[in-house]
Image (cartoon, rainbow, N blue to C red; front, side, top):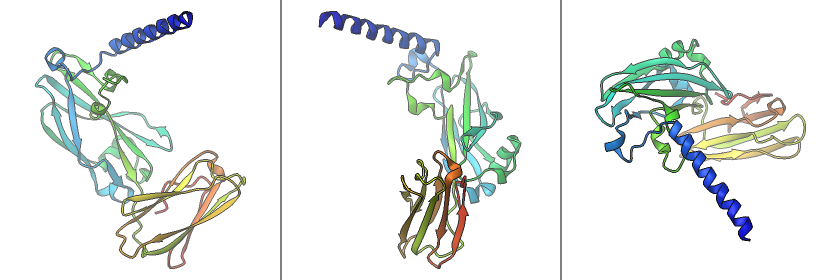
Length: 266
């Protein structure tokens, strides 16, 4: 047993040493010892982390940027769009040199910076923001300076790597109370491969899917006092096989959606 334990202990010590070296190379931000660290750390409080697709044309990315200590020269913000798992190029957006500062940038301007139309941003997309702070001593910090260890302060990456989710808009062109029907088809006959349809009623979400066979149906009862209904689709594997329709309480059939359904039906 001792012969086995010694090599294990040796491997553990080696792993710790390698992790320590890796984190040292990253020059990690450490806010637990500000007297010795004084890193040019920046925080941002974003007003809205989720924006409905139908509202984005008239909405702005806004929030307040502040510095932890008075040693930040500037904070640069860049942006990209992630759609269908594919990320665009990252484009510089704005630079803040006075703290605290309030920023407000219309999403139409963000789309223009990305070289796209606001209509190209749809439900299920992510707008990713990357920050870079420069200290008065010239030191530069990005999200890569944060470590992944238990002391890596994951929650404090927020001003350096964060997203705004573009969410499907609520159903607004038909009464939502009553019984809705979801009819799902799989063209290969082996279920939906991890994909699902979500009904979100007043912020409470339920997912619907099936894992075998060529078809399945579900009914969803939306109560009379419900204030909002959002219907969305989350992709899985073999998207070319997935098709579904939605029937509203008044009998209107929407769809078919798919193959390769979009994230939103409205």
